[in-house]
Length: 224
Figure 1 (tube, rainbow, N blue to C red):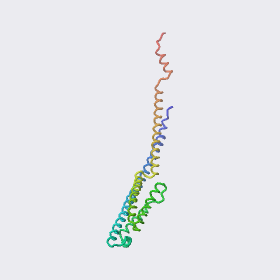
Figure 2: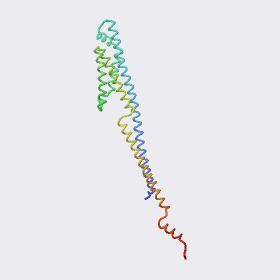
Figure 3: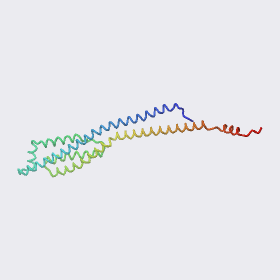
Figure 4: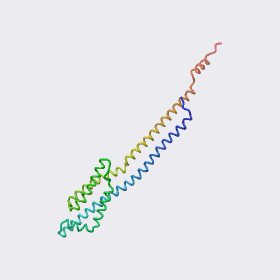
């Protein structure tokens, strides 16, 4: 049975609305995530800079304090207190440490992220504690561990900025599925309509059985 021509209008309108809605939603999500990714990239750059500043300040202070201790033959602890009385490097160190602690979320819901952040924060604190105690050898070891975990943390955050949050990934997948499904449904419907129209046209032009018999009868020779 052929479809009536009037069915094309509502089908076209509904299909176009579905596809347009899915595309608009995908565009909205993409724009929003693009902005979030930009902010996250700035956050990553800021964290990298603060970690570098924190580590370089500690290394510089260790170098200065060690030299001062060798010059004056005073114990490291005395030189440390002298340097910390009025030190721009030490102030910068404290500022960098505070900024780092404020950037990192210590309440991550995902277990792996929580463990990574916790380890990072513990090493930030341990590095500073060893420095304050004058245990410079342990401080250097803590710095090495801190740099190592920082690479892992920054890589993870970069991947998150590149791939987007899970909500964005799910929304993107849903949108793509919706567009694909709507397109496939519309294509199948159009093919069905085209097939039915073709069959109807064939039936119109094809001669019926009665017409065949009439044609055959008219072609018989007249014996009268």
